[in-house]
Length: 78
Length: 201
Image 1 (tube, rainbow over the protein chains, first blue to last red):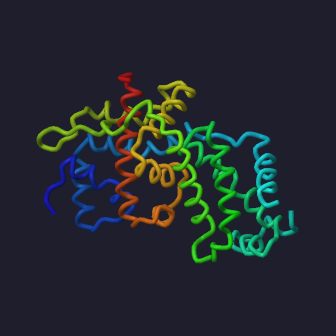
Image 2 (tube, rainbow over the protein chains, first blue to last red):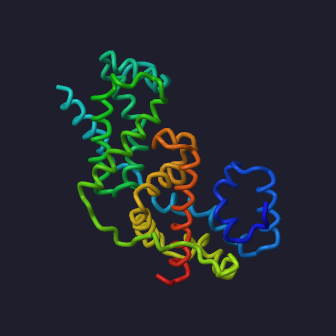
Image 3 (tube, rainbow over the protein chains, first blue to last red):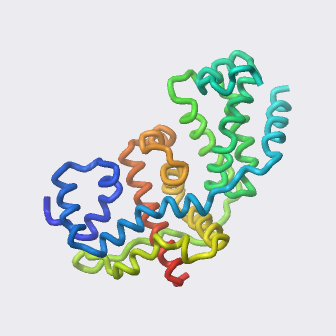
């Protein structure tokens, strides 16, 4: 495959992470990232993004919702 | 609750619920209510989530006889919950506070990332640099600001941590489509977090 630049590498990042690329494309991406501090930094933040959003949006179900839910479901079947 | 409900498989409980066993149905509700609530919060809002949860389980109850165990129960449930959330969003038809469509990485004419490594890395420090409550509000707004197709894939894959194959079954698309949607969403959210953490929003 042609030499990877940041843009073409970024475009394939999810497939890279999920192991959906052929070995030659994978190797070309790794060769680019090894010499590219920008991509290295980009990938680190791309990897961290789900965790940050997951932690920030973690909410507990309010106490009392289970009881009202079960009541509503019982009413619906009667 | 029926004895043994806690150890029974979803599919076993579903089969008993179809046969008219109410406690088996309620065991399924209790088992999944927290996950459905969390999903509903992320796809709609904390205010709308209780209604989405109720709609989801009402539909599960009404259509349980159509569930024949050809899919995993959880996949079927996530599909119903995702659709219920979408219906609520449509009913509200709110304009999102922020649109994330413009938040994408920038490249120069040679296809090199424009920002410095320090600037590119800052998104991964959003949780250190921002107040927890501010971050909670802003990330919810970011999810809200994603295009609909991307939002569902991102929430199911990256936040609820379903596998790509399971998200594909929930949404009825190919795994490659899931990867593409999650990727686009993650690019947008990453960029947004970077702007936020860098004090540019």
